[in-house]
Length: 369
Ligand code: NAP
Ligand code: ZN
Image: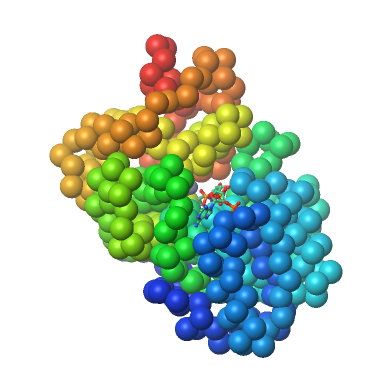
């Protein structure tokens, strides 16, 4: 058995974990740039907990709260300039995947000059500002992954900066911040985490440790399905989803994602469909496609979730996602031609051709081929 496992992020969990561990920030630097979205971190208490902890630890900070959903390249260059102007020597990102991914790119761009043309090329100097992350959705798992996913207008999709430099030093998981997350975003982000676990098991890069974590993550998310359907999540469910999302993040840090994510990026880029929902719409059809060549993998996913048949998962996903958007055959052809060029297509054990992507999109939106 040959594999490697690497997870350099120190994960600290539990109620009030930021204040209780405020001294952990001291190891990162003397002045922080807090990277966050426009509103939610101010409402859910996470920003206040961070700033109070910094004050108690005698650490200065400035706030960059201009990160939008699906952050743009312009936004991260603006954030990097803000970090340099502030003289920040570390970054704290608070929010969903968007502020966390922006925080990673900002930490990289504040420490070294990289042109836009070179941003996704993977050749970087060994320099980055240290990072501490506070996820407030559950989620992307970005707090434990080496990826920053940005809206790439040149390629008309979303593209990853991928380098181990992007692993944050610290991640604080406090489920209280997700308490008032609306049910639609809660469902979409939970399905994103589920998709990470499932795609991680399907990926050709899966290893024995990532499989253990993925099975546990998808089992725990499956346990929350009824509460998600009823919109009746308790604080314990919220904590469970945040934990499962982190596990799934550790999984994709090793395995990458597959065609589901590549295809979902087009739905987000062109149709503004939330990232997790985009994955959820495509997941069951991609699993059917994979089952034709690797029925064993799909069976172990279904079993880990407590189902007997893939159709049971498909039905639950349909119930959670509700009415689907309309997509034309022309749009599907365009999205397929973009998605087939993505790197993570190569992680699929049954490698799809462009016509297979057309079929998966078509079946997912229940159009006749
Ligand atoms: P998001 O875009 O970060 O946030 C979605 C919305 O939820 C925003 O309006 C945000 O408001 C709000 N929000 C966040 N936390 C909240 C809370 N606790 N209570 C109430 N509202 C809250 O959504 P996301 O699904 O978490 O992240 C999606 C992004 O992550 C995509 O760009 C995707 O590509 C990326 N992603 C990255 C990885 C990775 O490994 N790096 C993996 C998967 C996905 P504010 O703007 O006011 O904060
Ligand atoms: Zn994702």
